[in-house]
Image (cartoon, rainbow, N blue to C red; front, side):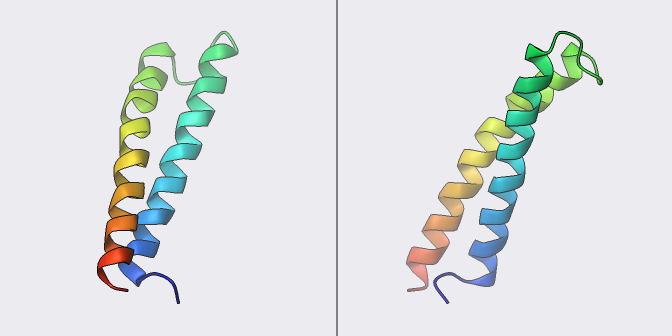
Length: 66
């Protein structure tokens, strides 16, 4: 196994956050987001740094446990 269960959870969370970011971008570009522009913008604003942070933590944890 390449990583640990902890790094796997971090990586999975990063994937979910990245999917949320991409979905928010498509919602905002479609014209009228289902949740409204403000809520969708907040989701986008939070999901991008969260995806990057969780990805970084996954890499750090996997390297620490090699």
